Image 1 (tube, one colour):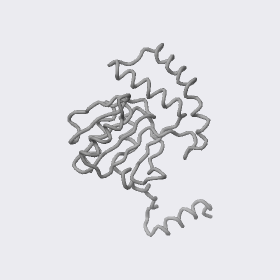
Image 2 (cartoon, rainbow, N blue to C red; image 1 turned 135 degrees about the vertical axis):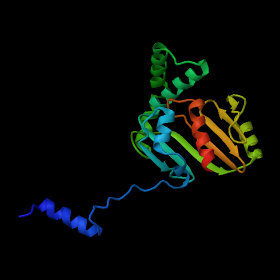
Image 3 (tube, helix red, strand yellow; image 1 turned 30 degrees about the vertical axis):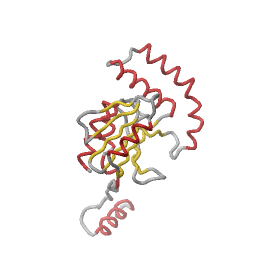
Image 4 (cartoon, rainbow, N blue to C red; image 1 turned 90 degrees about the horizontal axis):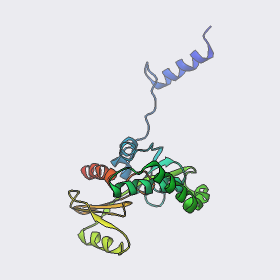
Length: 202
């Protein structure tokens, strides 16, 4: 007598119309999210991406999320930024000091985390590709104001700049790529290869 498990397996095989069980493939990424995979982003930014999805309010925007708290993500990003400015990794004592400061100053953000789209997750990278031209890039640059560090990036698209090691704007023809990376332990140098990959796909 055949076991119930064997009967169920045979029924599934028969329903598939073949001698092998057809497994459903994960849905393919579409829209802006197709431009970078979770693995691409994870390798470049030194994080484990747990979710890739379009933004709720704008499907032309794609979010790459990690597990964590807003305060920790912001602090880790600040440490990476400081290291990039110094040209070397911060020593453990300096990192610990920044983590303590970040927890004290930014800890209030964590109380709002329950209202986030996915509790316990933070967007490590956000990308958007929209129509734009040189005039729009210039207006964006001017809107940053004198208090924000705008740094040109050479050899990337037709023109590119970063803002305070946290945002990047790149124009290629009539397309403008915007990347926000305030939630990852990364700096602009880590994001540039991802920007090149996106430009190659648009």
